[in-house]
Image 1 (cartoon, rainbow, N blue to C red):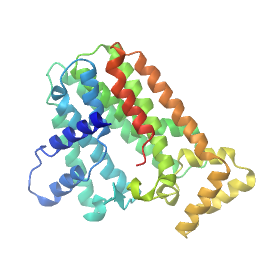
Image 2 (image 1 turned 90 degrees about the vertical axis):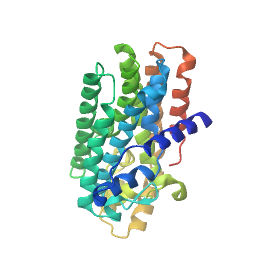
Image 3 (image 1 turned 180 degrees about the vertical axis):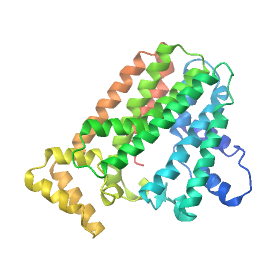
Length: 322
């Protein structure tokens, strides 16, 4: 979509204008690197689109949009460290390019910069914006902790998993939209409706990410294919497989978690998922949250044509290949 591409270019232009000090190099070079390795810039785009939908120019919400993206990149740095991920957007991750300690500290600096950008707002709106940002930040931490807790549990339910990704991933999309609505002075009902829209899109987005982790084209995905299987992550794919598996199939799934030949581990797990039609079940969950997102957006009290670009963006995300 050309219009969405224009928003991405606009965000990229202004991200490069974020004032990052030069010294010390090992604190700020990873910061700069994180902001220059690309990405879809969906979260800041949502802030700008929300603000415009409620009738103000996007420039007024630009600092808040940038704050969301800087915060998001901070979480990715720490997430990659915890997952020991070698690649992010087809580029070497920060802890691999430098080291873990540098990644942690540079990420912390990004978090502080995110709050600075957020605070460039009408003083009357600052308390609400800060409260939302603080709530979102702690919810993201809770989601990450639940994700790590699940590694040691064999009784994780699909419901628990959906709640974990709501916290870890989707609240930030909802908050990005709500921030735009705050800057635009929208009603509480409208702010809550766009927040719910963002949450359901975020859940659908993460389910799609789970699917792509195993089924994406490696050239387009930008991350290691089968990384979740290698890390023994209890993704929605895995949890649905557990629910659908026979006693013998479950035993095979459990044995595969200890296989050291990674190519075989990925291939055999995928074969079992295919047999159990796990991908199709995950897509049904994804489509269900997409429908709930659209229902939430219907409650926003602006003309339908002003919502079309958000619906278009959501549809684009559901069809993405990376």
